[in-house]
Length: 536
View 1 (cartoon, one colour):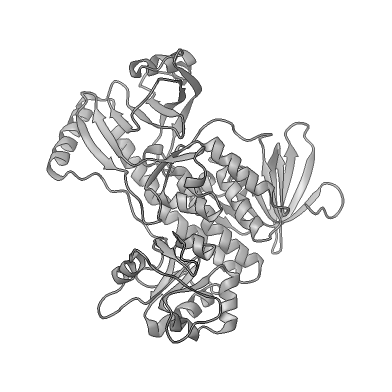
View 2 (tube, rainbow, N blue to C red):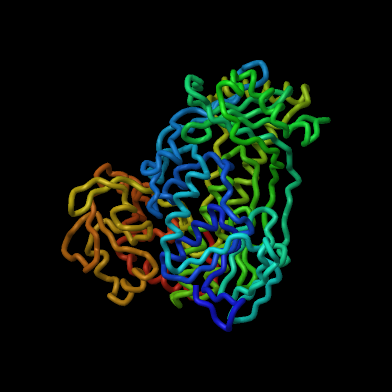
C-alpha cells in the first residue's frame, strides 16, 4: 500500500472496515478492477467457527463470478436437493417447503456450507491482489470527510498506536454494531422482533449418520431447528424459553443435554461450537452519507429463518462494487451511488419482514397460540399443499427501466465457438451483457459506446449470427432454449423482447425490441451520469 505524507498516513481509493465475507467480496471485486483498497478489521485473525450455514442459487452465482463455483469447492459447500419440513410438538406436519431443484441463476436453489472454509477460499483470492492491503487488529474511530476525500482514525487494538486512513470512499461492512454507521450518525430502524437462540454446531463421528434433511420443530416445549451445517457437519438451534437465562442456556452441558434426544453424545460427535445469539430485525435508514457507504449486517439484520442474512450482504457487495468502480474510474457520476441504497434496501427489507413472519410462526411457547397455529397450518397444508412463498422483490428505485427493469436475470447453459457447454457467465467472463436474438441488432452500437460498455463490464452477445457481426460480439447457442423462453416471457405478442441488458450484478437494466436496441444501450450509459432515479 502506498503511504503518503510520512508515517501514520495510509492512502487508498477505498477503505473497507470489516473483513467478513462481505468485506472480502468487496475487496476482491474492487481490487480485481485495479483499485487500491485498504481493509481494516479489529480482529487479529479470521473467525474460525461456523456462523451462516445456508445459501441460495443467487449466492452461488455470485461465488461463480469470483471463480468459486459451488461445484469447485466441495470442502466448503454442498447442494441440498430436498424439502424443508416443519412439524409441531406432536410430530404433525405443518408445512413442507420445497428447497429442491435448480434456481433461475443456474445453480441449486439451496446449499449448506461451512463459512470458515468459504472464507479461507476468499482470503486466498484477496491476498493474491497487489492492490489490496489488509490491516488486522485495528479499529475504526473518528471519521471526517470533505468534497474530495474521507479520513478515518485507526487504532491498533494491541497497543493503541494510531494512524489515519485517507481514501476517496469508506465502506462500513463491520457488522450489526457497525462503528462506521454509528460514527456517521445513520439511524438504525428496529422492528422490535428479537429472540435468543442457542446455536450448536456438531461434527458427527464415524458411524453417526443423519438424514440429509432440514427440519423445523415448532414445539412449545422448545422450538428448535435441525439442518445440515455444510460438508461433514450438522447444526441445531434451540430457542431460549421464558424464565431461562442466556447464561443457563449457553453452557456446554446444556448443549449436550439438548442434543441427547437426537442420539448425539460426547462419545460419537465433536461439539464444534455453541453460542447464544439474539436474532433481530433491523435496517439502516440510509446506506450512503456523503463518502460513507454501508453493506451487509451494518445495513440490515434479519432473523435466520429464511436463510438470507449473508445472502443479502453479498448482494449488497455485487451492487455496490461495480457502481463504485465506475465512479472511481470516471465512467459515472457519483450520483450513481445514490441508487445503491434504494435498490438494495427494498430487497433486504422484504426478506427481513419475511424472516420475521416465519419467526412469528416458529417462536411460540404459549400452548393456546400454538394450537391455533397448528389448526390453521395443518388445514391449509391439507387443502393447498402450498408453502408460504418467499418474496421475489426486484430492485427498488435506481438504474433500470421498463416493466422488467430491476428483475434478476436468469442464467442458462450455452455453447460458444468451441462447442463446450457451460453457464453463460463463464462463457462471457462475467455477468454483464447486452444480449440480443440476432447479431445484426448490435451493429447500431457505435465503437465508442461498445468500448464504454466494455469498460463497465457489459459484453456483447447474440444467439444468432445473421447479416452482420460486430467485432467483439460473442455468438452463442442457447442449447436448452432457456433464453428464448425467457425472452418470450418478458415480452408480449405486440411488444416482443429481442434484447436485454444485464448489469454486472445480474439484474436487468431493461429490455427492448430489435428496433430499440441502441436506445437500450444509450439509456444505460446516460443513466450513469444522471441524478434521476428511474422507477421500476
